[in-house]
Length: 192
Image (cartoon, rainbow, N blue to C red; front, side):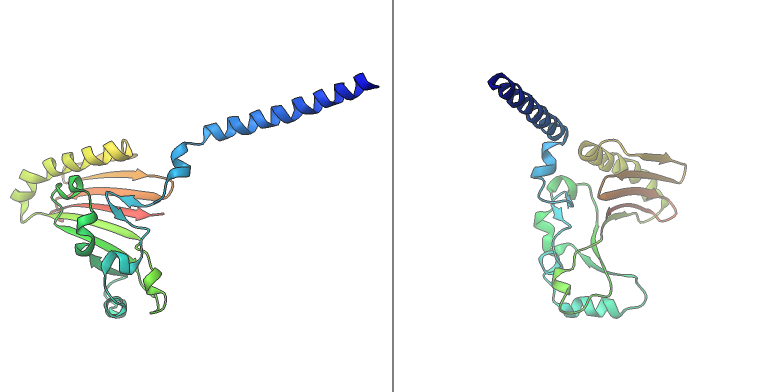
């Protein structure tokens, strides 16, 4: 009888041990940075998970004035207030426009918890000659920085008059375009 009890105890121990080993094996497959990531949308120092006031230092009136404007689908503000937070390697790329894009339709009580949906950075060229002489170099610098951080783009389309690059992650999409017809290079970070 005693031998039978020992047999069942050993069998139960092995069962729990094998379940424990399976759990450990499964957890080891999950990257550690999933647990340590504090910002889902931290883009070169710009915390797109922050709220309206933290990113703009502007009151509700600023939001409301743009919210009432029917010519735009978004409320758009510059990044002047958070300029010091943006990584210098990103600022050194030469973007002249840095914009946070918020959804419309938020009331006064909720505007302070409102978060941006998009970040847009743009380089504008004065004319076709300016575009031709500078855009290729600008794209190369931007691509180098994005590839270092986000790996190779999923889409890499280069044509005579434009180029498009796209990165897609679990919770973001980045699109980089360079267009002669718009005389611009534009980067858009979109939260998914």
